[in-house]
Image (cartoon, rainbow, N blue to C red; front, top):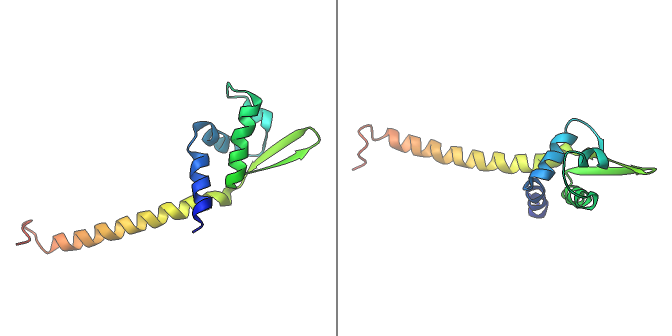
Length: 111
């Protein structure tokens, strides 16, 4: 699993503003000004957030005339999903082994 890509994904999702932008884009494409509307911050700050989202691969943008439209890239979330699923599977395997071990000692005393 490419660690650098995963690091960028988690870095991008670590900020509530960027998570909000991803949530909005999950509903469909939006212009930069539409994405900026809910936030009390400057347009350059919004653009910086979007740049990090684009660097992580979570968002793609296209400029047509004077309007830059952003779209979410759902496939980029699958990298984080795979990472979580692997950790979950490993933890479940350890718990299953512990459960099997503890079944051998119904009274709770392994001695």
